[in-house]
Image 1 (tube, helix red, strand yellow):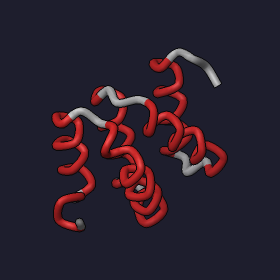
Image 2 (cartoon, rainbow, N blue to C red):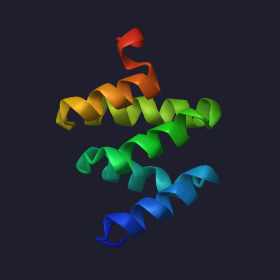
Image 3 (cartoon, rainbow, N blue to C red):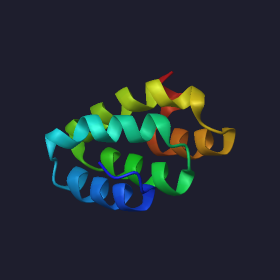
Image 4 (cartoon, rainbow, N blue to C red):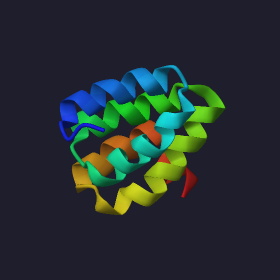
Length: 87
């Protein structure tokens, strides 16, 4: 996978939109190592809008990634995922 976050983000958007299961591990690695809100917020939103499959994946990944995110990113993704309501 590319080291360019912009390209990887674009690829993940396409892969996740198409429920491409082989991309799940890449999405997890990206979202747990990349804290930029411009990348993580749209991907979490896309997952949350993808029904049960995406919701489950989003919550699993966010549970692992949340502590490493800046507070502003946490607030944004908390709103997208409903994290505070569930925890």
